[in-house]
Length: 373
Picture 1 (cartoon, one colour):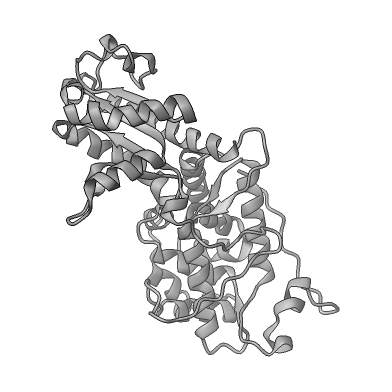
Picture 2 (tube, rainbow, N blue to C red):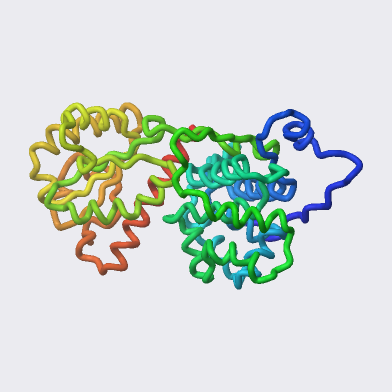
């Protein structure tokens, strides 16, 4: 990731910026907030850096990294006691290790995650509903809005730095000299709900430089489907695998389907058939119980194997326990995630985690390759 963004130059009084000329409420008669020049530049650089790194998505962590580099929000973080260089280092490692890669050869169409969109929407929504005379969204608005993403690693790393939402608000009361409009926004934003009020209209915008800054989130039916076939005896292995796949689901990279998603009242057979048909990747958690299951052998494997031959479905076998995998004339033709001679459950806990992480990485790469195909 780039660590040397261009500095935002002071606005000239001689000529308004192109973006403010387009959507300045004073000139249009509307109250839709405008985006401050320093925030526009920060967002542009965040998208540029994500695309240079060939990241398929831009996340809340990308956003916080950009804020840690932008002068105004960097000063705010430092005033709260943050070690900004340490924060950026941790964010950079997390982003590089956990962000799905785009097409390695073609142009990368970096898309914002749902969390990224929510952060921007919360900031815009509050500025829109505030009593400010100047409806302008700045980096401080976005910084505090990040705290609404409680389960994100961005908030986790802020807490590691000892920074809370209250710390940002307290800047006003500790006499820190800042842009007063920005400081007032911190106090106002601290009062918003993490969940948007029912019926409130959102005002989304598209950054001229980023083009796709706020876009509708993909419906589940539009995301690639991963089908996981397993024996219920091996549910513990499925649960651990799903933990490793969760970040990909959070980034809207893939939908992970197993029969654990069935709810009371679902027509389970039709749900099973639908998800088998929709799958672009399949993970097989193989054990003696898996191979002995008549239901798996007669109902799940045949459509997956046919689709693998006809439509390029990717099958990823994982050998959990000693079993007849290598003697199976069909399944043994697929490369397993681990050495069949060294089943997963015979490995140390750390080695097992490495295999699960490897599987998640394979899923991310496969989805990226199919998206670019």
